[in-house]
Image (cartoon, rainbow, N blue to C red; front, side, top):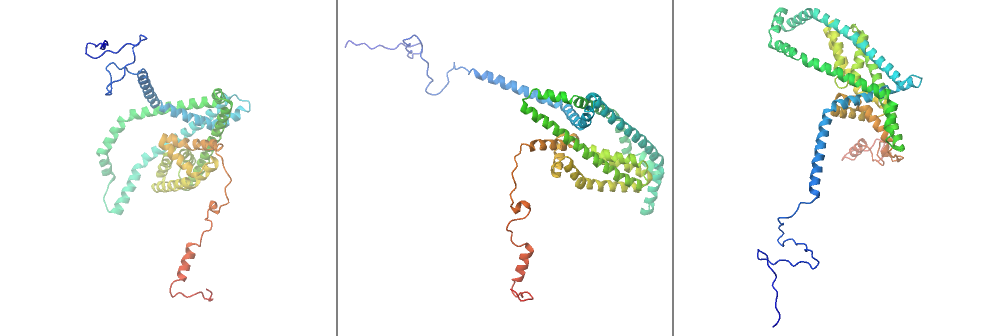
Length: 422
């Protein structure tokens, strides 16, 4: 026949070449049927950018974490300074309302606190130095009395000279002296660090208190009016709650000081007023270890009068601390800071776990502020008249004692009541 069949041209590999499109463009290639990728497949354009962005975010996170850990001490100092500024805010505002410049009023408050603290530390230091000298001078007599008591009750033949020689030749004393000598530099560094930290807290507290209105204006200037009212309300609540907490601590310090003063005067311990003030302030304003530091000094002074007096002081400190923890502190804290005693106790534990002593000190005012601020956003309803709400069950049957009596009366062979009623 006259028809001719055209054969598709083949390429160098022997496969048929694809026909060109009539419009001069090459049609898209289809993926192979077996699912294998072609050697010339390209990476998606978004993948390199996503990888760079992920690496940049990871680097920023690592840098922020490192900076946060490096600045943790400074942030804690700023937090302490902020709460101290809130504590003195009422006094500064009271002076400022009567015509004094706010900076001058803040300086007067800080100067009064520094003078009172310096006078107390000076008086306490001179008293402590005198008592230590007295203890060193009277130590041989104390040692003789202890040795005589041991010889009488345990039928031994100890002598003070033998005890002193054995103590001087002991490896424990030699190691203690060597460790103390090598630790002098560490103690000096810690003291300098503590002074620098105290100076930092004092400066930040002064700035926060003196520039409180300016700080509030700067914070409110970047917020809408509705948010400004909430911030100012939260600030006022924080001032009230922190002041209430300081008031409760001061009241507990007064009660503790009076109680210990009565005991020390009864035992004729010297410097009883100073020791009472020491116990009151240290036990209330140094959390966690304040009680032990407060009780150690009166015990030391009482030991110079009579060793048995030190034991009586120790017993009184322990008993009073239990009374304060379980009776006095929950009631005063709940009234002045307006939080439940269980919440106050739990907040102190949580604050200690998070920030140590600082967390224990600021936990109660922080939780009280948060509770008072969030209380305005919690919707409350009228409580139902169900008796179970008031502490007893509705429709409860007879009590356990009544049921026991009924079972006893229905036992086999039991006689009825004396009047013959069923």
